[in-house]
Length: 194
Image (cartoon, rainbow, N blue to C red; front, side, top):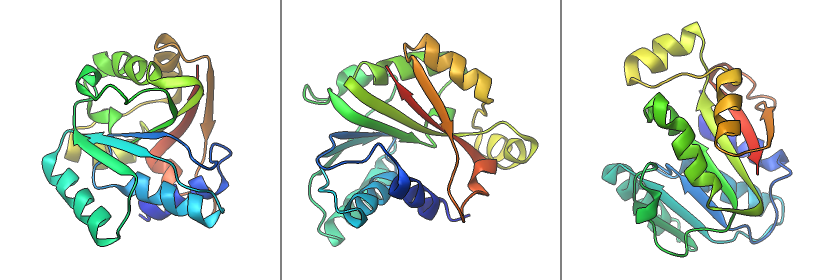
C-alpha cells in the first residue's frame, strides 16, 4: 500500500517541519514515521532535532534499534512504554514541538482515547502540534483492519470531538498527497494544536 512512502510524501510538504524539531513518536513501532520524518527533513534542507519514541511492543523496538544501528542514525531515543501510562516516561520527555502518532491510537480502548490524547497534549509546548494518522471507519477498513487486527475505526466527527475533549482547539483534517491519495481510504490525517 506504500504506507511509508505516503507518510514521507506528507512530511515533504508539511508546514510543521523546520530544523531542530523536538519530536515525540508515540507508538513508534519499527520506526516508519521517525525514518520518514528524518528523510523529509533532510530532503528539505532541515537539520533533524532530537526524536524520542516509545512503543509497547519489544520486538518492534528491537527492529527499530537495529535499523538505527545499521543506518548509523543518532539523535533518536526509544523506550518501551504505554500511551496510557505516560508518567513512566523520563522527566525530559515533554515540551515537544511535534508529537506524531501513526496507527497506534486505534488499538487503545475507545473509552480511553480522550485520556491518551490529553496525555499527549500535556507534553506539547505551547506552540506544538499533534499529528495523528489513524484508521478511518469505512467498510473496507472494517474488514481489513477492524476484523483482522481488532482495531477501532473512527469517523472524522468522532476524532474531532475526542480531540476537543482532550483540550485541543485547532483541528484540521489533511489528505495524503499525490500519488498516495489511496491511503486516505485507509486513514485520517489530523493536525491539532492547543
